[in-house]
Image (cartoon, rainbow, N blue to C red; front, side, top):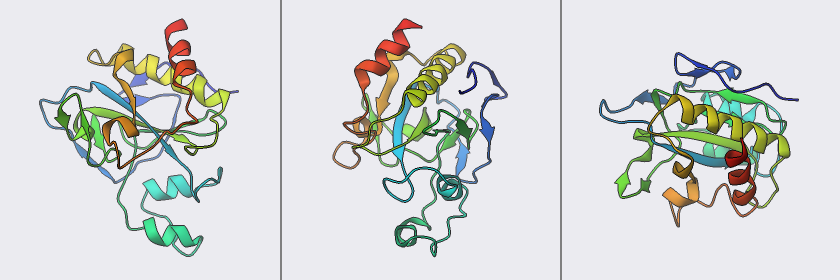
Length: 187
């Protein structure tokens, strides 16, 4: 089973595996953390497990390991958290820093969501159901973040598709928002 995900210290989730992505920078001084963005990622596409996501966020993805990697290995991206299929969590960027997860984006009329959001990747794909362990870990992470960062709320959790419509589709139709919101509300 997965660990309890309820402690943040020095802007890091204590129970997460910590890997330091170089793909980050400072948030604007006036930016409150007020949004959580849920993403989906699988490398290679539709395949789970292995080190490829870590390598991608750490700029160590070997383009010779899979044809798809040749297309993406030069991209400089990151997320604050990754939740694997078994519910285990890895943190790449401290929450007080800007991870490069949202790209061109807008929420509630404010552009550049990376400035004020926390990005959480789920190991998955738009059309493949997420695991119970992922929903449980995501719920715990979001509850902890909401407690720690006062500008966050249950209503300020969106998919990448919501802040980049027409450009992004994740977490996709396989993400059960009703289930997730019920879990979040019941705890």
